[in-house]
Length: 436
Image (cartoon, rainbow, N blue to C red; front, side, top):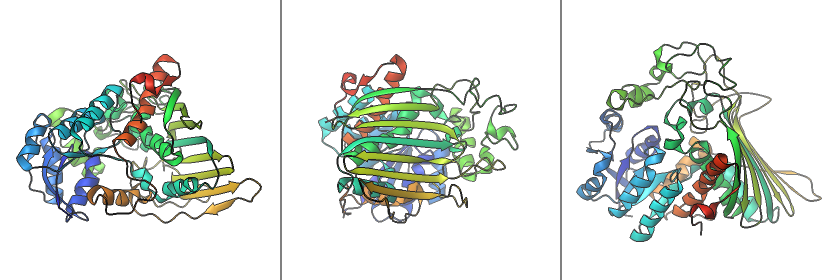
């Protein structure tokens, strides 16, 4: 297999997985030849960490970067609102693209990307690592095998805890113009899972929700105590604050780099300026006739998710605990327990997953979930095989996701945001988005 030439656009925390892979497990599959990043300190962190000696280009010079270094593929890990521009420009400049979810944040962004894909015929991969987690792929296998018959309805509840959930309200994601809100940035993962699990296309969306817990007027503000200006200003023992100085990686990527662009990674989740929601409920109708009821809570005492799939012949239930509680004395030093395994013992809510299938007139049975290791339930390592060794791994469950999968996932969140604005159900087709 040809060793491809890679550039990475955006060197925040999300780039870590791809750059680490190119420096380690997938060194023989790809060569990093350049970075596209406006912040020189942030780019220098990874160059030092992985001993990469590659040039840095500003985003305005992406086309020049691709031409100068004969880039085969660009990995886009820049902030969400930049994806449409970076992806479409990279495709038109002659490179294939691997883009982190969400594909984009607006209907206009979808049009920009799909036009570029159609014009160039180049390859676009959307990285949905949760498809690869063994617990999620096992549910896909159960449904694809017809074990509960035709899928009629899905209920999906996702709980973010007071460490991981609060973190979306400390960083740029708190601004809907930059992230699309949690319905796009976070829930596109979940909507993609449902689209993939049931093999159907979303048609109509209704959403309700608001900023209920975080922000200066949220229900959590009154009990949060006096608020520091930022987490790294000496907010000792405050479970809602993130002190970047306590994590060398975060300090290098953000605190030491903020003099270039003024970006603060440690904002107070109860400060003014938040334009996204923290409690959401969504109903989605599919072309198959199935319907989804979905909820997202960003301030739970534990983290994980529950999925119920009702079929014509029975029911499947998947329960996953990624963190059983957030210890008050630490505030949750591991911000994202889905990306980094946590070692906890809790007899009431043990960390792990359980998949139960019950057909009509039969006893329930537990389906064994293969053991996964590493980030996102063991999904990251398998995803990276498909990214850096495309076509080399059998894919009987259809885990590899392309441009259309990315469109279908974000379209639900974009329609949900429109529904939040209008109070009405929104047909995805009315947004000018093609899902076929």
